[in-house]
Image (cartoon, rainbow, N blue to C red; front, side, top):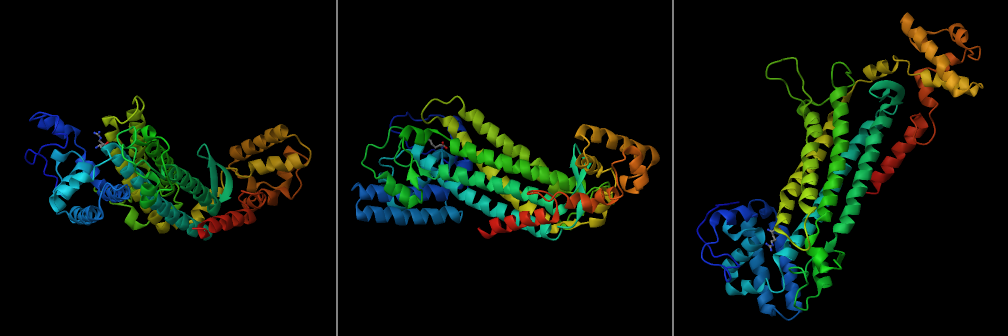
Length: 468
Ligand code: ARG
């Protein structure tokens, strides 16, 4: 795409009221073509629908409509192929398309803007963009979820420590851990769908703010654009960007989930943990330390959350003081929206690939679950089942853990006699009861880490994926 900048001295569209030179520097400062050229497809879609609506209202003849539609096809292809020259002198994508259309079809092009404003035009473009990008995000989340389920499927029996406060807490199976992320991403998906439902409204016909002065059938235009309905209020239609704020919030939350997952992969791939190895394509070496295998992709998944949060904060801040209706501040909505969308889509893609590349070390994971007194809660529960209050049981097991620490032992090393020294309620089955497998098997309620519970979660996940 050519963006020649100061290419000559064209009369702006509002040239009728303004004097000779409104100031090139200021005009270029207010121009948005450097970034909103990305909306050319949406803009041309909107123009096609508007032209058809003008024709329906007998404002354009059949012949004029056909000329405009054919001209728009030509302009779209010229922009797509990079042959069209887009200029800052024409400020934004809307005006550039109109100027290009006039180059192709002549004066009839000047009729296209009848009953329309760039205010409802840009709002329409952005609604189309958000609805479409959400569809891409859905696809991206699904691919990641599928890879999580595939990995979980192979690790329903792989034990690792579950952590709280980054301290080993209770043993879990890897499938359980991975499915936690599956369900987070499922909520993300539904958040995007909620946002999509609200963005699925056409602002077209709202014109500058008060509604078009022509009898335009707004429902007809909305239908042509694939929207489910129209904005009920024209001032609202042109002046809110809450649908973008909502989209960016959903994007920020998804990035937060991706970042947490990435952080686990960074930790798990250290030599200290050694739980996983990330595929070579997702790690890089160091320019100075030959032994290094840096988890760069995971680090950047974690790091890129910052810029998406930034886009959300930026737009919220831009919008907060704006009176009705359109204000030029709103032009600042686009770069954050585009950057957040590009970032999110590439992060989803990388995360899916990263998951598929993970090599798990079940030995390291299992060994980590055998140390750190992960059976302590279950030992306390054992006493509770035999009539001890939980607080008292907690105290007794605390003493047992202190005894182990003092003697370099794990709970599994204790004989039934030693257990009984701390409480006569311990019978010899305590030894089995606090084995890792026993602890896991005991958590067989809905959502737990026991084999049946995890199998049920896997089935649920597969069912969700099966629904598309
Ligand atoms: N470039 C503008 C934007 O992105 C389009 C709308 C301009 N409207 C206006 N009245 N200046 O918001």
